[in-house]
Amino acid sequence: MAKVKPRTEIRFILNGRDVSLSDVAPDGTLLDWLRLDRGLYGSKEGCGEGDCGACTVLVGRLLGGKLAYESVNACIRFVGSLDATHVVTIEHLKGSDGKLHPVQQAMVDFHGSQCGFCTPGFVMSLYGLWMKSATPSDGEIEKALQGNLCRCTGYEAIVRAAKAISSYGKAAKDPLMAERKAIIARLSALKDGSRVEIGEGRKRLVVPGSLDDFAKLYKDEPKATIVAGSTDVGLWVTKQMRDIAPAVFIAGLDELKTISEVDGAISIGAGVTYTEAFSLLARRIPALGALVNRIGGEQVRNMGTIGGNVANGSPIGDTPPPLIALGARLTLRRGAKSRTIPLEDFFIAYGKQDRQPGEFVERAIVPLPARGEKFAVYKVSKRRDEDITSTLGAFRLAVARDGTVAAIRIAFGGMAATPKRAFAVEAALIGKPWTEQTVEAAIAAFETDFTPLTDMRATAAYRMLAAKNLLRRFFIETSGTKAPVQVGRAA
Image (spheres, rainbow, N blue to C red):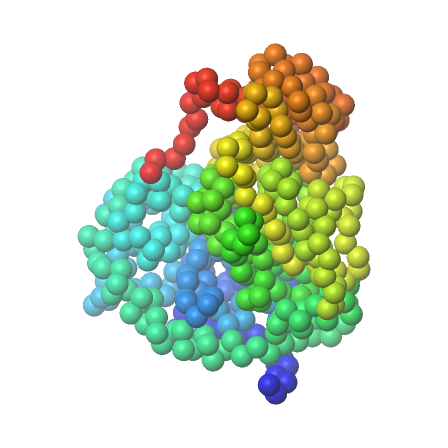
């Protein structure tokens, strides 16, 4: 195959028009570009950190030849990540004969807006949902709107509007559905496999053309900032004003977006988003599916990647504790060479991981719980939805026929400088009868395993008490006694 010549412009579709940009800053956000460069003011800046949803737009992309439109936060989505995508803003919505779009008309008729600041974001989130499900359930509507906050209307009117959209028109006749073949052809032409390079020196932006291209690039430039979903890196720019150049945007690398079940384990490419992973995880490891539904809002889940959550090394990242409890392994790559390590060994200290210069997370291999094993994940946060974790505990248990603990793995986030195993607690349980007395005797070992900190999310005392109580809860839910009632979303 002939070598593809590098390009010097980002190419994508904005609403109905092709766009080519050769002057793109590594830290330029989609929201700023829409408002300041294109005069499209429907998308608003509320929080600037992917929480409120006022900036919501849809981004369509090809994966495996199929076109998917997803709601994203334009305030933390970088223009550099848009190559070969279709960006749809609220200005593109229209109904037949010059009327309002069905989503817009439903919001008007059911009084889903008051001040109107957040309304464009709600409309775009509902638009994305409507294309996936013409008659969504209450649970589907609530999930789609987790990342949209309204300060004045109240959500009941918006939910009623969401249920009524299809009475104003058919999703199959919507332009994004009717023109799908044409958009696929246009995006396929844009997705030419070439590397994109814009700028020089510290103002350089690169979009690798392939995984091999990325591996070589990062080996040669190990100080570059890797940007996958930008749900964290976006805040480095909007809140911390950090310089992320040179920036390497990898969200379009299909080789990192594969997820499959092989030999009793789920293999998750580092570029797989929470949304892309949800179906398989929810089916094969239900506790992980439930956890994914509480990570950010729908926009964040559509952008954020499991590999990025791991590689970031945050002590309060949601996915590392359950993956550690499951015995996950991590494949790291540097250039053409790869190595695989236990995930728990990846985290060395706060802000430090077992990753050589130029080495990146390529894949996580997550063993499935064996038949008869118990696995649970508990996230503690101030809000149930769209909130950062205070502490998170994950438990995997195997009980022998005689009722004793044959094996147990316990991992926590928010309790130390890194995601961490509770080795002392595990040792106090292994070989003992799985009883309340055994659990209560092991509780004290938490003081050996962890010395949590006090911060804005929780005090050290609260975290310690919560961790102990999560073990008690896990025992109750796995011992045959009546489990506590859990507040859940309607189906």
